[in-house]
Length: 298
Image 1 (tube, rainbow, N blue to C red):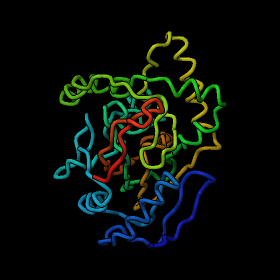
Image 2 (image 1 turned 90 degrees about the vertical axis):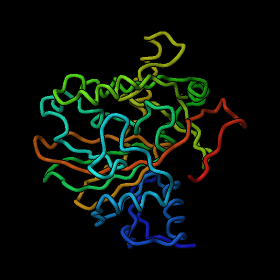
Image 3 (image 1 turned 120 degrees about the horizontal axis):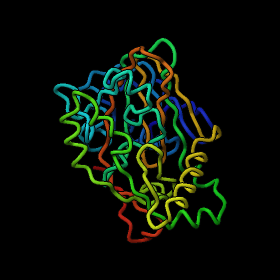
Image 4 (image 1 turned 90 degrees about the horizontal axis):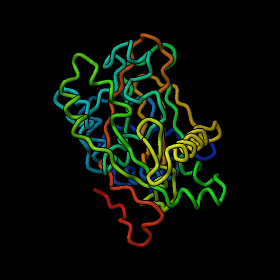
């Protein structure tokens, strides 16, 4: 088996992969080694990989089928799978009001659809001279460090995820007519509060403040109290890795085991990255048991 040059960044989360050129036609063994590393470290970082959209799409397709860029935001010209994560997409006023599509809130990508992407790949094209880092949180560690009675409770719960929580700003933007129509077609969905990873079998918390609206079956105050505790627990420094971007960096993370947060600390400087996402499966929780669907390579 191919062995990668891997530098772990924390005790449980994140690793830098060196000596791999993602623009090349990598061997199946190398792709399998990257897949194993992703399962182990949950988020991988590659330096000096400034990819054209065609190159990013070609590399990502080695790991599965690609989803459209985003349910609301269109892709770059000619590449409907490539989402421009661009600070100029929303107005400065909207970003200062903390309404910038949830990027600067803890979130897992696109959990407001029935089958969220199972992984995402983000490539840095324009990086501000100061600030603009991204943080990732280990949702498996967040679950495993809960006390047993609390794990037993959250194992049984479901929560509603709603795109309008983060993307309601599109209705107020002058150019948001098409986006508003796409937003209106998205209906809230229910997911387990604890997700079972279909490859590793690990359990992870699967709620986030950007898209989760409430817990099903609990009184509003009860559900809100539990969610606030879980959000605080997820964001503890002990389970965070923070990445200082350079142009050409590529991050590859497992959405079934992580949440992330783009730090909005760079003022009016430009920040642009390209993201592609891999089609995922419907999340299932511990209650699904032996009947749960298992992940298969697309």
